[in-house]
Length: 325
Image 1: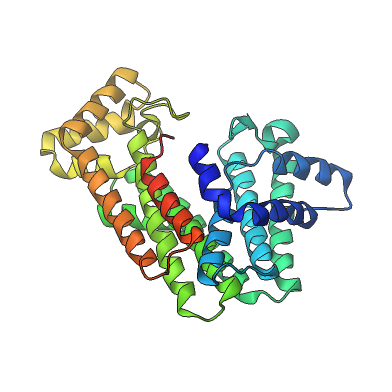
Image 2: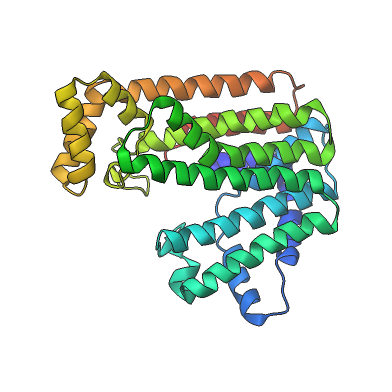
């Protein structure tokens, strides 16, 4: 967590203020809702999304933030939390960041209603303040996240994902939300400027690198809170696997697809798949692609003058590909 504290350092004041405002934005007249949202707020993760919003805003506006910045960060967090709550219901997941999920504690019906409540809170926060440009950015992100999930489900049934389709899935599922955080950061302080698109692209590149790094964890030996081989067990086609399939002979390809479709719960077989992917150079290829996204993101930052906020964003970009979990 030391690196996260370092990244957060130039925006510590804004992040503290954001937490107070965010609590206010989540409040309701229904006691049960307040109890549940209190539980949600107190189990926050690293808070990468609001950090992106504030760091980008301060870098673009030379240290300035405004009320729109706080609302933008809050809208992102409200709507993202709503999608996570719904995800846990869909996945029948009982844990979230090491804590019980809402559906585990309050059952599915309440969890879905709380997700709807958070979504409406996010929408109204933008509408009431006429932040229509910020609302459009986050709404596009939510649409793309849903499409990306559905595209992945559709393709997982046939295991026919090409590299191009894989990039489209991770762009929509993961990168689009980080892109939204960065473009909202810019749009909050410099609406209708070239910074909005530049920062959207910057966030998208980081998101792509982030997801590929996540895929690589599935093949690693480190304890990262996610068991090795879980993507294979869930029949998820990740970049190392797609590359290995493309390099494989027809016989090896059949064995691989059969292993993933019919033997994904067999630990020995999963280990054999991981070994095969490594031997085919799947990991090396994925690292190369991840580093290419990483360097393109850094190139965008070169256009901005040096500042503590730019330094933190540089740290963030490097953390994305160097993190251990």
